[in-house]
Length: 153
Image 1 (cartoon, rainbow, N blue to C red):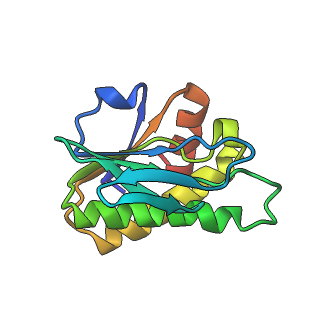
Image 2: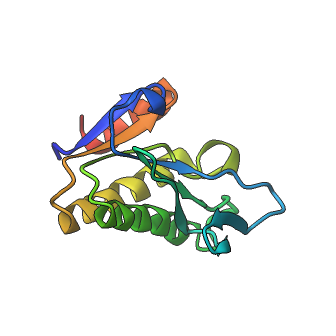
Image 3: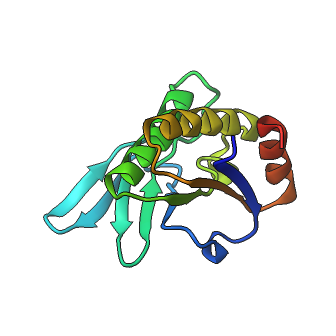
């Protein structure tokens, strides 16, 4: 799909209108409170929240910690991507970069996380023709290669 791209490097270097990043959660914490104008909004695993709109939309996703695959981790991860794509539509975003959600410290197997991410992004692009570019921003060559192989690029 020509609207999906892969970038290896820092997400801050990308010229996009929105950035979606994984909010880090500690081992003991399953919920997060995000400051808003009306006070604190509880954020559940699988939810996303706009945390800044100054020039660029920043969306934080509370991705699941991998616990073996029997605790709806894939559904929660899919929810992060789906809800983030809904927010890009709400904010009329034409370009968005995603950092890997739940990989690394949260232990989600990269190949499974990438498959979930690609599926949800493709669904989101079908629903939102305004988006011209979705960039998967990878921090290392291994993750970048996994995305490329899964996308056939």
